Length: 494
Image 1: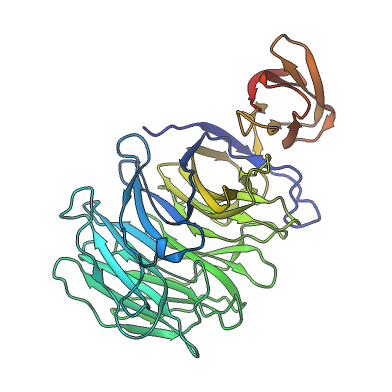
Image 2: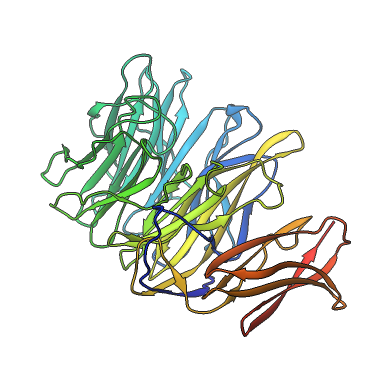
């Protein structure tokens, strides 16, 4: 069952402050967290999608320690009401970079990278059309004595084909390629060279299919280490043709999604300022000018998939590890060139984790979203990575202004994590500048500490409660701001 939490957002016109992209307070995505997997494995390169019924589907790679021969791919869904794994591979070779999509009948199609008998990386594919919840025999999409790298796959609309893009990975010049496979006839199409491009890491090349039966490809040439020119191709003319994007800067991490009106949305990180930008293109049209969607601080990276809801609102997640901006996983959303402040999805306030990995977002309806994110830890001598999902609804109304969002009412959010040991983050929102008191009480009503007692500006604020030196038990935190007062429960476990 999909849980929805409604947050009404009212946006008012404000005078922009002098520093572009300045954020005075950090909003928090106060949806419940579901732990998908937490064990002794490194679970990563996941991403999620919604099907038409609003059920979540996810794929990921996982390995034990640093042994790549243990790397396998998994497919998950919550059709039963909980996220349930289906093991796709079980062998002693390296399987990685899993990608997936639905056909018009919502069968699941999977493509990924696997080492062949010659220990070279090739592309492989399967589906569950004739295998129920399992998957049928695998098909090699590429063969031959050359490594293939970082594949991505799209399922065609009403053409019974899956479409692959990938790089070669050799000493010397690499190239970007396209290849399709008809999963009904079993016919494998020719390999088409798109142009020179060097394999990098995540989100170097992507492909998507629109409702008009056309395919769209975006990639970076990676001409210099970690960045290159943005390239875009489509087959609107009947053959794959490069279409100018108007972006002259070096970029990295291009990602792409297509909305219900077959409008293409591309995001990328500009190398000169490390901000994320978006541009869009309607069928047969030209690209809009790029619009910055993140502030001029931080270093956004490792977003695995972006999405739009049925209103055309674009949702983008990313993680930041740069100390010039709060470290964590973030969400931004917007349309028509107007985007929200970054919303904090995950920040490790307990230091239980040593880093962050990939993230993705799936969207449907009007603001119905599910966000996945990954966090790495050291556990029993292994570096591991856990996968989490937050799901809920964001509703946005009123007059919108870039980087300025104002909520109508006071909000005291649930603390995170809860239970906690020894610290937890308490977030709240005040709609105007006022005196704020934030207190901690024990279960008998005794005041433990006052975390805040000062005048605070309008916006979202987060305070960390460090419970070192006090025993395990039930505690309460209470906010008093103007005429607003609310108390919530939290549990300390040591």
